[in-house]
Length: 270
Image: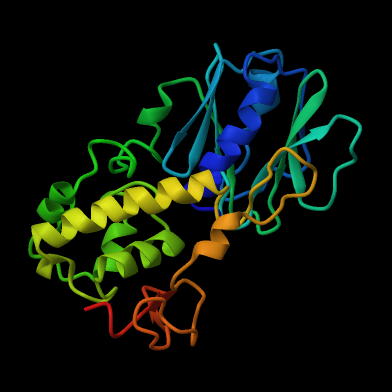
């Protein structure tokens, strides 16, 4: 699924095309997503100007004078800019049409969300209880260490909990734990402050690097066809089962942890 770097890459890619642009039309072809598309979305969004586009965790927030459009890409969603003349394909569920370009929401599995709020979007029920942004100054090793006290949950699930830190997904959790030398199944409450400080710093560095390279799953969000992100070439353990560890050369292992495939090195992570 698109993770934080892919969502941030989307935001960066679409912003020059739609910021300060007026919405000419909203075309809704499918109303049944993870939550129903608001019945009044076209009425609320049409003729509004997109004043800004921000990201909170894996949510994109489109600010207008009337309210905020909230989009989550779910498991398989993407946003792309296409020319207005480009016909929709299967799974192209929603178009936000501007003067020359269309912002197109594509989601084969329909686990994404397109919502609207007239209130502060950060107070929306889906966003108000999220933890700090991993790239913010609020996210530190001390923050993790304090919240981990006495917790028996494994550390991988702990850092993927959006109430602990917002937006660390499976790929980047696996990579961060590898660089920090922490086994993904180690109990969160049995990790020292010093190791959490290393982990927090590695999370920041990996996410930043992934954003710079366009993410792992998608890179170009301004063309009709998305292209693979280049961070996939930098992965140390994720999806590298059986390949030699880049440090010790032992084969990378995979194990299902919290219903997700987790990749790690038994020699380097403990």
